[in-house]
Length: 515
Image (cartoon, rainbow, N blue to C red; front, top):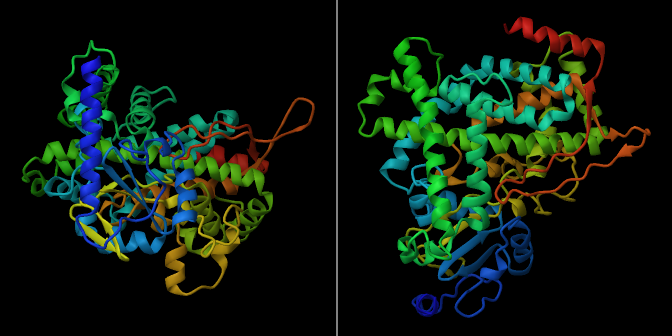
């Protein structure tokens, strides 16, 4: 144990010396400002494992648009304004689109081929080409019938068991993605594929990638070779278990598709369509890329949907006046004889504003997944070293008072104001919540459409309010945030019931119309 401590101390010294030398390499060009590090360890004590966006937001107020910290030699930059994110992650995307090569997450836990973690290069380009072919904006209308079917099924489950709304949202987002990606139909909240996916997404978000996803083994690679029986090797034992589970998560749904296609009994899906495309199949590593791209779509969509819709429900409880205005617009435009469809979207400006404000207020992923700088760069006179991890601080951008006055308030009217096209672009939360540059979420259009239809259908048919206890007293919602990557609220009590008998009939009749 003493030898290990000595080796660790020596390694820390070498890393710290490297950082100091690296910093002085470019004469007269300082690193971006940031909280003061402690010797050897850097800012390791400043990085909280949960809700890291909160201290990052405070650093933004203190140090400005770009903040630098380092952990045992790993440089980390937080981009706190839209201007900084657009300039670096979009305009300079050719050098800011790589992903960090993290030994724990990528190699030991088997996540290196997920789209979110694939290094920038030929593999990442092939994966994105597959996903854009299936989920590009021109293709999305082909999914509208399925989105409507799944949304109507969600409404029926919700009115039957409103207290289980969180499970219903999970089943909706997970079931929709399983259907779109694999042609698989989840038949219950306890479906085996839904359970497997939820377990793996939970492991990835709450364990593997917690606290920025940097583990001691990422800084000191020799630790991956220590025996699993050694004290302190718990991370290796966990990695073995997590890797098996991740591989099961990738392989089982994909094998389901292939087996169904062999039997001739299968539904059209992302995987089946591409497996039948002879031109695409001729590309090297096609099946490998397809399998991992399919899995990545599921991982990305489920918690984004859950987080946004949960915050929408919370907002409607806390701001009944916004709910009332949206319902009045729906009654005027859609009427009460049918459920809303995508054809109504352009005619519902206030509902669209509620949707945008829900995205802005919720901030589903407050810190973007990290990019890795591929070569030394300069920004506003500051030096950013090659290898630095770059986080888009979406939480702070969507709380920018110059763009969103009174940013903590839920106020859809802010999106009804007349502004210049440039200001409209800057204030559109859809330009932030799905990531930046060449690492923007390739499934953003499908997620956007599915969440919008879910929200508008709930507004059209349901009244959402605070719960009331057995004594008739209003129960104020208690909200906690436990997920270190997604800003997903804990289950809170609320009351959801049909707006009228007519609304209930529409929900029940939807089963007949989609059968």
